[in-house]
Structure formats: C-alpha cells, structure tokens
Image (cartoon, rainbow, N blue to C red; front, side, top):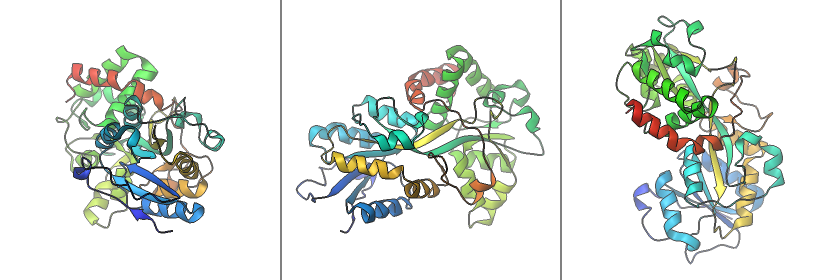
Length: 341
C-alpha cells in the first residue's frame, strides 16, 4: 500500500483535522517534530515490513502538543515524535501520552532511555559536546562540563541562549547530579565566562571558535559532523580548525539527550502505534533513525559509520532522561536568576 505523506508547514497546524473521513484499514498517524528527510526511509521500511501505511504531519513540537490537546479524544494522532527529553516531558505533562507495556521495548532499550511508566522512549542519542581552539586551550584543563565555570576561561565561551532546550537539559542534568545550589553556581560561572551574549544556533557556536570570537563552545555533536562532511569547503575548514571533547569521561560520562516518541493518549490505531515504536528499536530502524542526523543508536551493538565510528567507544551519562524533564522548570528559574539570556 502506498504511503500517504501528509506533511504540512507549522503554519497549517491550526487548521482542522486532516485525517478525518479518510481512514485506511491499516495505518498509523504520526505527528512529528523531526524534520529530517532521511526519516522517509524509516517510514518506508516500516510499511514494507508490516503493510501498515504511515501518515505524517510535521510541525513545531509545542504546536503539535497544543494541537493534540485541542483535538482531544477526536485526535487522529497515534504517535508524537520529537527531539529532546525536555520536549517529551512537556508533552507528557500536557497529557499527550499514554503508558504502554512492551516486552520488546523493555528488552531492547536501556533503562535510561525509557520513561518509568512507558509514556515515551528514546531511540537516538545526541551528545552535548565541548569544542575548543587547540592553539589557545589546554585540554588538560577542560575535561568536564564543570570546568566551563572555571575562572581561567573568563571571556572564552560561546554558547546558546537559555531559551534553547538543549541547554535547559544540560543544566537539568547538572541539577540531577549536583543539586540546585551547585548547579546555579555553575550556571553563574558559565555566564561570567561568556565571550559574548548568547546568540545563534549550535553551528554558530562552533563557527565562533573557528573565527576566533571565542576559544570554547558547547554544541550538539551532529552539528560538528555536518560541518565536517559538508560540500562547502568553508564549513569543512571551520570544523577542522576546532577540536571536539566528549566530557566527563573520568566520571559520569558525556551528557546525552534523545530523539524519542510515545503513543498518544487517545490513539485510534494503538496497536499499530506500538508496532511502530517496536520497529524503531530494531537494528534496521536504529541505523536509519540515527544515521540520518549523525546521531548514535540507543540499542547496544548497532554499529555507526563515518565520522562517528572514528570516535570509538566513550562513556555516556546513565541518568534516566526523564530527569531532564523533571528538572526543566528548575533549570529555567536558575537561568533567569543568573542572567543567562
């Protein structure tokens, strides 16, 4: 059966339900905040394997959450797919997800990648990495996230705004590991060490190091890989002029976040939705889901290739990613208090 792509721009998300009156016998309806063309291969593989058609509606995560809430029990959504544990937690708090039981997901996914009540699951990992200028920074002094607050790096750091969910989740992890007071002291230290007011996206932080605007940056690892593998020579030059550091290898490991999904509370095709999530945990889907955005699989033994393969094994924080959502409100309050704009 053919796939029915139903991707709409975010501006269309306030329109009426698009699936109504056109149901198929075997389908699954996915509201997705992932905007990677490579995900199409994932949907095609699922349909080929199961015969279940995949219908997609794309949009911003917060808009999708609001749409599902507004549609209520009449929502055609079976699955919400998004990135970052903070956004998954917001969806959970809004009542978007239902808890499910799946032996496949329990066996395939690590404990840290599963919501305690089965409301959502992580299927790819993204590392919040540190980048530095090897001519100006001695990596012996920069091994941990905690070191970013060291006064020796005053005026050296480029990092995104506190509105960015990736930074909120990083601070949430600091709260989980160190408590509120120490996490706030760290955030204040990072603010004191900023080379400039936060601006731009993750790629801009890496470019800031390459251009000499700052000596240290924080960004998700895949932005760096995109630059390294770009067709643009200036992108490759920027990436090659900096070094990547995967922090806290002598302790808890590098902070990781997720691309994840859950079954919507009133999913009309609940069984198909669970089958789709179980498919995402298969070796085939893990390779497709992760490789499309240069992320890491969550299932042990699934190989990575390209640049990621050259990094070898490294230690990742085993903190259950649900904690990143639970501490999100506290992280935002800390950012406000320390003036991290």
